[in-house]
Length: 117
Image (cartoon, rainbow, N blue to C red):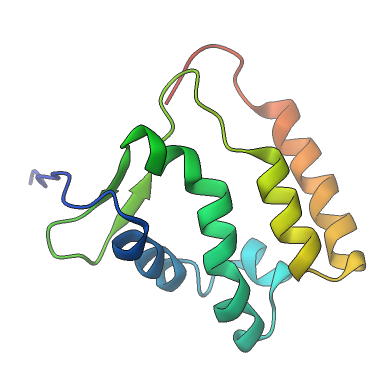
């Protein structure tokens, strides 16, 4: 079976709510925002901070039915680390933020260096 994906919306207003719902049970995200109210209040800003480059590059996609979305970074385009950290520092308590930093350092050490999507 082939699933045809086509770009429908690159606008944050169409993509961010889909991603908020998609990550509602994600263990790593919920470590940052275990309280549902905090998650729904702060995670949309995190998505915008993390995915801003994808919106700017025109590589934020939404499925035809609007029930799926993806933020793609083309080679040479990276998330804005400063914007991400500013968002997290404003919304995550220090103890959780320290654990998250350790995880981000590990991820950075495993990140490919060759151009990739």
